[in-house]
Length: 289
Image (cartoon, helix red, strand yellow):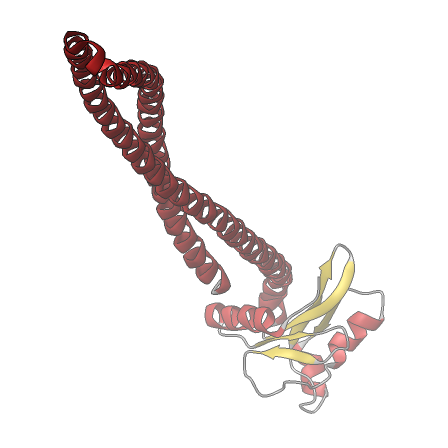
């Protein structure tokens, strides 16, 4: 721990305000770094040099010694400022020796307390700033990840909507084919009946209707085959229809789930935005500590 001018000046100003006696604080070289009178900054103090360079922790000047010095010294008391037994400077105060000595002893301890408080505040401030920066970085990273998830869900939702549309369109097309098959069956049935009627008429015509009978028989046979094929296609289309309905229901269900997840991701993204703003405000406050 080292002396700093701001802390030292704060202590001497406080002592002067309370006692009305001027005080100084010197650094490890004996130079004055804090002065309640503010007129001797940088001056090397003899009493401070004696304390810092010797075994004694105190240095006092009596009224008689001050008078004998011809104005070179003032009555007062100086004492070492120690951090764990190490001298880091001195505190000096001018005034009646009996009055200022106890003040100087208290003030030297006050300097150490203020320095420790300042060091602790600095450490705390740096810790808060570091945590705020780390929090901000973590929130930004999380927000970026959530934004990516939200975007992916939106793409899935769009794809699901497309899947639903395709499935629905395919189902409608199957229905259209089934309707066409119904028409084919009806036409095939009518054609078969016409073929039968033609065969009957050919039989009545005798030898003259034999060629017509062959054609009528072919028409009837083709109608029956068409009807059979239409029936088989109808069965297959029924299976397709059922499958498309299952796909459509599944796609609609998946689409709803994906939509809900996308909305939830949007809400989470909004929450992270609020947390990010709070983290930025915290960092700004921490930077002002």
